[in-house]
Image (cartoon, rainbow, N blue to C red; front, side, top):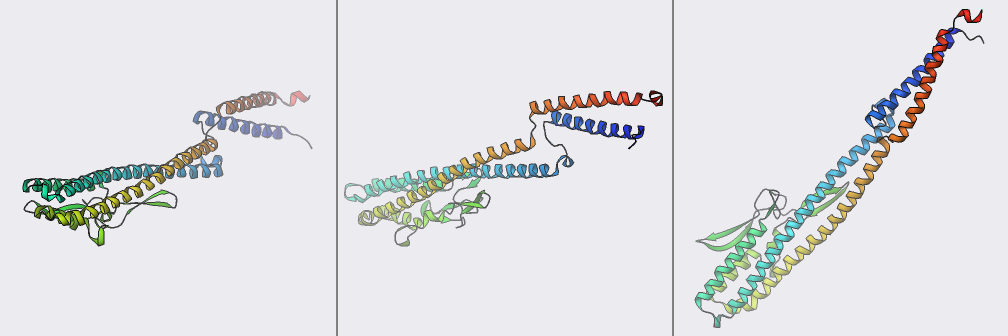
Length: 303
């Protein structure tokens, strides 16, 4: 086969363009520190990088939800702790008032006043909000859940204005957790189905009238039931908190793994890539040098 000048020039230009393109691609990678700078560089790799970025973004969202939920349940626990302390004080006042034979009318009225203040404190604790959202109003987080019913300054009951559905949060793909936001749980777990509203109203009436037998025989036991209910709710919240902490650890680990995978697929190994660039430049310069000699060749060289 006869090798013509045209064939030689075409082969030279093809090799020259190939080497120049390779060098330019490596320069782009070194300047951007990314393996691919456009989809055409490697469509499959670009698709994988897009998927990894999407997973990282979604995982970050889950992580923020977990942290928000942890702060939420910690706020709930603090609120219920305050409720438990107030109930313990009310129990002491019931026990003190039950000894009516040793207390005067003024002392009983003082106890009644203090019990009323503790009830108000309980309502304030249950109306606690986190980040502008009420923690015991079910899914109606913008509605204050509890209000006191009063007549002429006297407490006559408690009204729950929230929803009875707990707040659901997605903490991982396909994994949800219910935050115990149904405040009605606090009101309606008393003895014989009696609610906390009726219970508090009964205590105030009994202290006001000096009904010591009812205070000692009925209300001392019932307040222990309500305190147990609050303790049980705190236990439930503690279990949820532990689960959220475990989920947070898994989320952090997964985030690290995803970022490492993204780096492996997207980021350039600068030292290795610079070595490649040097080798490519040797080939590029050799091609230029050979091209110079080819271009200088004419018919006179063969005469």
